[in-house]
Amino acid sequence: MKIILMGPPGAGKGTQGNWISNYLNIPKVSSGDLFREHQNNHTELGKLASSYMQKGKLVPDKITVAMVMEWIENNKHAKGFVLDGYPRTLTQAEALDLSLTNNGLGNLDKAINVDVPTDVLISRLSGRLVCSNCSQIYNIKYAPPQNDNVCDTCKEQLYLRDDDKKEAIQKRIEVYFESTIPLISYYEATNILVQIDGSNSIDVVTNQLKNILSN
Ligand SMILES: [Zn+2]
Image (cartoon, rainbow, N blue to C red):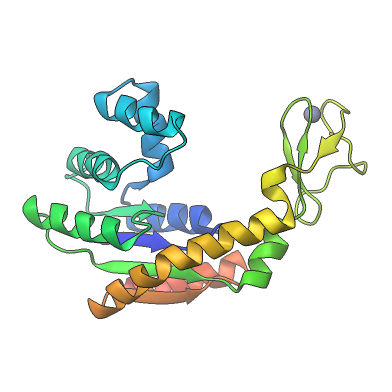
């Protein structure tokens, strides 16, 4: 089962991806994991990727596709894979399909889109607070500190990062939706798109996934 998992920031993709990976006993990876791994191991691809990131540029698709294909090749004895949050654009999707075909690995089986309304995403993502000293992350709603604005561990002040301000969150979500609309149409056209409602609780979403993967 070759699966890609799509969803905006705050959709719970990480959790769902881990669940699928355990349920089907197949490996999972995200492009973020791959970048970190390549950079930590100082590989040629990692150095190339870093050279773009240091200039504040996007890493070109061919570098990311090369990392993904190498990972797939290293995991070729598994019964499939889950790609978490990759591909993210139409160009990446086409490049991935082409690489799979060229390497005799066939087609993707499912493109699962975790759909969550923007207002739910904003409510989930806002309320994040970070400790100014030890960087521990809290959430006003889901993981509040014992005392308001004070870190449980080191008793220092908590603060709101610029990235976690409402306008920044909204912008991040907009950018995500803009870049993925063509991607969703692409997978719809190849009949592998599966939409799941990610606004429900983790258990409900997991059950939906179980039904989809059992078919
Ligand atoms: Zn702290």
